[in-house]
Amino acid sequence: MPAHPPSALPISLRGISVEVAGTTLIRELSLDVGGGEVLGLLGPNGSGKSTALRCVYRAMRPTAGAVLLDGESLSEQSIRDTARRIAALTQDSRAELDFTVEEVVALGRYPHQNGSARLTGRERELCREALRRMDITHLATRSVLTLSGGERQRVLMARALVQEPAVLVLDEPTNHLDVRHQIELLGFLRRCGLTVLVALHDLNLAAATCDRIAVLRSGALVACGTPAEVLTTGLVRSVFGVDATVVTHPRTGVLQLLYDMPTADRPIETDSPTTPEGIAP
Image (cartoon, rainbow, N blue to C red):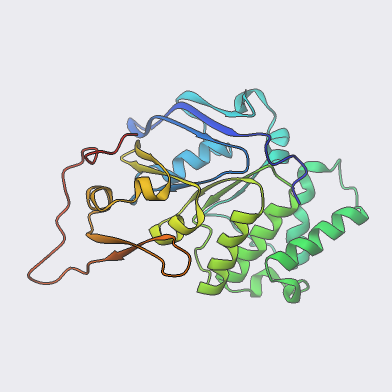
């Protein structure tokens, strides 16, 4: 489905900082996302994941630093040009108008259209394919106002795919989805060939989905590397404040975490906010 080669248009965050009302939300964050790579952003609530993503899809402008798309600063591009190459599914995405599902999905073609031109045959086929991929073909004529949260999430994901982006920016895309559709969506991200920057809370889903993981805490990068390099017992305890045992899935070999539940005689104790030993940002 992507109109651009998957090797094109990598994203680079070059020392971006974000300050709002005197509070630093992001501090000198630098990350490179290669073409066709799935990079996961992890971190506790308030760590800066959503703020970093907002800078990428241009809902927020960094106070310092720059976000580059294929080596060109986003600030030098028009919003429409950016929208042709970057699609975002955000936590606050809404579909509140009384449109049908197929009408909402077709809105993904807006950045590519001039005026109110009707969809071409190719664009209608793109919409049908996106509906199929997100398993919502049977909802095509339903009003989005009648859908569950999970169904709306899949509609908005289909709209993003119809945009034909080279880069997908996803902020907690599994919110509201049942287990089956979580797995199907994240499996699709691994196969789609797009450059994907995704914020997730579930460390096990991130380990199974992402090529690399970047961990944020208090707006700063703590660690970046493969899931096996990053998701260690030391880092999970230091950053997330939980004890976990690292295992591998018996069939796939994918790293997974088994969490120790706190008890009355063994409550969770968080470590001091320092970089975990042996982890280099």
